[in-house]
Amino acid sequence: MQNLNSMLIDKSAVLPGKAIDFQTLTQQIKAWGLELGFQQIGITGVDLSTDAKHLDNWLHAGRHGEMTYMSRHGSRRSRPQELVQGTLRVISARMDYFPPDARLAPTVLADQRRAYISRYALGRDYHRLLRKRLQDLADRISDSIGTFGYRAFVDSAPVLEKALARNAGLGWIGKHSNLINPKAGSWFFLGELYTDLPLPVDEPFVATHCGSCQACLDVCPTRAIVAPYQVDARRCISYLTIELKGPIPLEFRKAMGNRIFGCDDCQLLCPWNRFAKPASEAGFRVRHGLDAPELVSLFQWSREEFFRKTEGSAIRRIGYERWLRNIAVALGNAVSSGQITAALAARAGHESELVREHVQWALSQHVSN
Image (cartoon, rainbow, N blue to C red; front, side, top):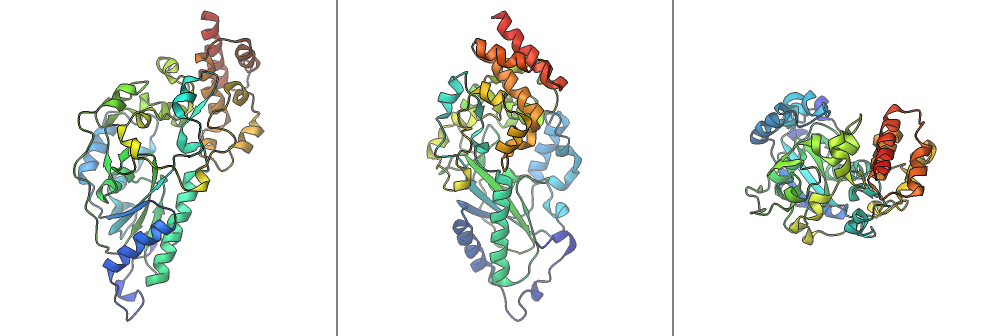
């Protein structure tokens, strides 16, 4: 991979003696992207000044919680040319991920015996999969024009991916803060190639199309969408189950229901997702029956079983203790049964204080019932 931080390209040095038709190259890039499994490719410049103000206000309000990495990188998140020196354009790509073989989400959410895992995490880890496809795209570009400067990102660095995708014409940012495409809803991943190629840019989405709808605000279990286009991560179930390392605040535990990894409620209710397409990528199909697993069964996994069954999955990043923490809360919210209290009691003396505390809370919910 060519790294722009260590390499500035003299365009005249790319395939000496041959001028590059960047308009044609852009068309080729978009065609190659489709061949590689992306559903859409867009290209934008690096101006994110308006979004920088929104980010600064969000950080100043402390709505990023423990995600200190959001503020650690300063202006590089909103200034691509500072993150990767020499960047002129961003190639933004999206790939549908909704697993076609997954059990219906509302059915799983309504069954307190089962665990709900965000649909994006049911298959293989998207970070590796998309990054490999972006690398393949970069390889095709270099095969065509010679060496050029680029760097690939998939939710792995200080990148304002949704703002860049909007500017590249892939959709608008909805009231729930997710990107929405008018022909594909919001069930897709984003990835980027920062490049020094002066490619022609696409028309951005300059308006939103949410209208007066506020289904996402109304359905959020913890009222994390505090106002249209404003999300307080500290209240979000995705943050609480994935990013938060310590105890889950008491005020949110009941609202979590049976959600043990992420939350999709705002997307499930979004009317634009009637246009969403199921994933064509085989890697996003359900693995290990995690689309509707029994809570008690998951809670009984050993550490070794957890790491074996989450190999190659985004779930692994939370680790075994937080996995048990989240499931304990879900068991506390389930209808009481001897099987559930027995499973919880078996973990009451767990070596982790974090796990023990949540198990005790869960047991107290069944005693009070």
